[in-house]
Image (cartoon, rainbow, N blue to C red; front, side, top):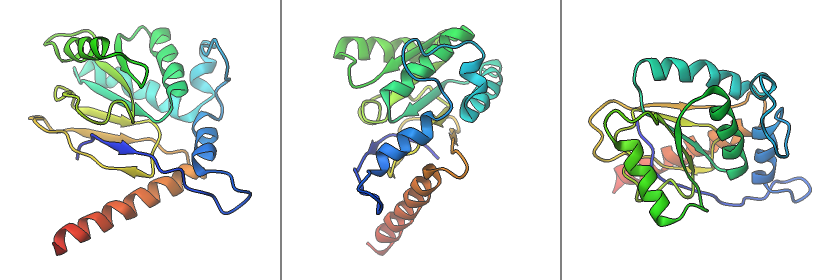
Length: 193
């Protein structure tokens, strides 16, 4: 299993005209104090269930010399993740929609270098989905889920582990359910030619 591209559809919710993407943002960030600075010490971790899980997972991945891609739909959430990584002393790279071409290329090159201390790469799903060679990564973390996620890592020689974080009883469960239905439909269409 592997990951490369994502796109977002701004689908309407049945009640009150709210978009599901707005509700998803609330579900994903819920429990994290918003507004700069995002760092609140240990509260940054303990107030969000996904952050607790990430905090348990990353030390184990670093210990086994894994290379980790963390995807999020929202740059604001990437800011929070960046504060977390700084708080824990992890070295990382980041690409989002505001990253220029030269900086983007330099980040990719740094991450892919053998022995690089930067074992984590933060990516927004829109900016990090296409045209990026991060085949040195062996772990993908989908911090939040999108309606239409498709996946491929080309040129990867190692097995890739994918972790899809989901908050129980939140709109994310519906997002993931729809994404899996779409993937099943795509597979059916491809099989039937």
